[in-house]
Image 1 (cartoon, rainbow, N blue to C red):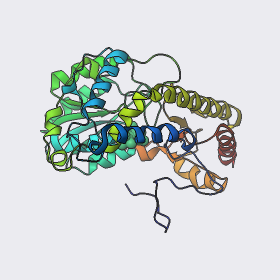
Image 2: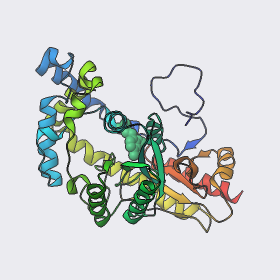
Image 3: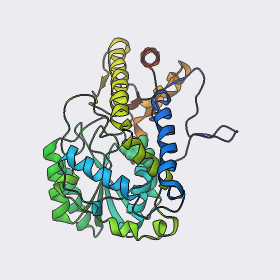
Length: 363
Ligand SMILES: Cc1ncc(COP(=O)(O)O)c(C=O)c1O
C-alpha cells in the first residue's frame, strides 16, 4: 500500500496540492474550517489552568477531566450508560485500530472486512500477522448473513475468526450507513461467535440530514480499557496524545465544540449538495452515485464500458483526479467505481471538478 511519490522537500502536513488539478482524492478536513482561534485560546487556557500537568506524561487512560466530559456527553447524546471505566483516549482511530490488533489479536487470527473498505485501515491491519478476509458488501454496508456465512466457512477450514472491522456510518469510501437492524444483528452475531467488533465511527458527528441509528456498541457494550491502559506502549509513553487531549477538554469547556460542529456541518453539507448538483448536471448518462447523509465521501459508478483505472489518466489530463475503486477492494474488483471526496473543495471547485470529470468520460 504505497504512498504517492513524495515531493523532494520535507513536508509539514500530509496533504500537498497539485497545481491545476482539482483533487477529489484527499479525504482531509477543509483548512478553512479548522478552529484555529478557539484552539489557540483553549491551549492557552489549558496551560493557565493545569500548568505543568499539560506537559508532563499523561495518565495512560487519558486525562480524567476529558474522560468525564466525554462520558457525560455520550450518555446524554447516545443514550448510553458509560462510566469512566469504559473510556480510553487515543491519538485517533488509526492508533486505536493498531493497538486493538496488537493487544487483542493473536497471529493468524482472521479479520472479516466488508468491502469496499477504508484502504488505509487495511494498511494498519496488514502491519500485523492477521488473516484478512474480505466480505462483499452492498449499498447498506454489509449483510450480516454474509458475515455469518464467512464465519462458518472459516471455521470449517480451521481458521480463527476473531474480529470484524466495520465503518457503519457515512462509510469511507461509499458514504453508506448501516441500518439499525443490521447493527443489532451484527452485535448478536459477535456475541454468538465471540467476535470483536471494531466499529470505526469517525464520521458519526458529521450528519447533514435525518437521524442516525444507534451505534453497534450500544447493542453489545464492552470495555477492554484496562488491557490498553496496562499495555506496554501506554505504560511507557503515557497517555497519547496528552497535550492535545488537555487542549480539547478546555475547548469543550469554552463551549466552542458545539458551535464549531454546527459550523462545519453546514459547510460540509453545502459542499456535498454542490457536488451532487454538479454531478447531475455534468456527468453523462449511465453514471450513478450514492447520496451520503453525512461524512466526506461519495461513491460513483461509472457508465458501462468505462473503468476507473482507464479513466484516471484521462481525468488527470483534464485537470481532475479521484481514487479508483480498486484501492478499497482488498483484492475484490471495484474498477467500475470511483471515490469522490468533497470535504476539501469549495463549492465552485466541486462544480468545476464535476464538469472536468464529465469531459474526461466523454473523451
Ligand atoms: C473510516 C476511517 N477511519 C479512520 C480514519 C483515520 O482516522 P484518524 O485520523 O482518527 O486516525 C479515516 C480517515 O480518513 C477514515 O476514513
